[in-house]
Length: 199
Image: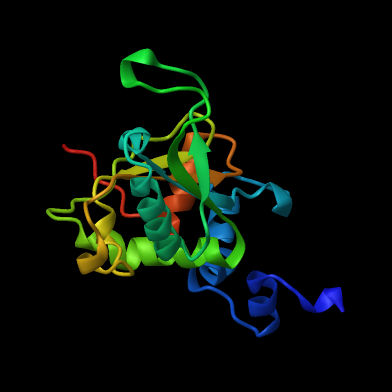
């Protein structure tokens, strides 16, 4: 009986649903990566492994209700319940003690990850005021990319009337790429609108 309780991702796969960007990666992007970087082994082709969304709230130390609101909003954006992040060390200047809740985080994998990426690229980022692309300088040297979003209200899933204040959001793309060059190529081919370098 326990086998019937499958995850949403598995049941979605059983229904034949496959996210648009996942299909694009399999049918087009993977082959381009193999050719561009002369990769012989199919398993060595860089791929997107997970996307981590994080909202940090220093004010939560004064008002814990802010954290509950942020968690609800992050759940709406991601489609998955977030976990609460806590301070790792005490900082007296910020009235922060070890273990205090200071934010919330969600890790997306599988179809939810691909669906979120599609919504981010096609719907959310174009809503940023005076949008000229995302910076290509935010790679960490190990093939991962972090995008800082100043206003989480760019996601149409949120109801403006129910949001008390705009919050910042960090989105980290964790890839299996060996270096930043491969990760950049992977994300660009998936549709990430990187800012063109100024002449």
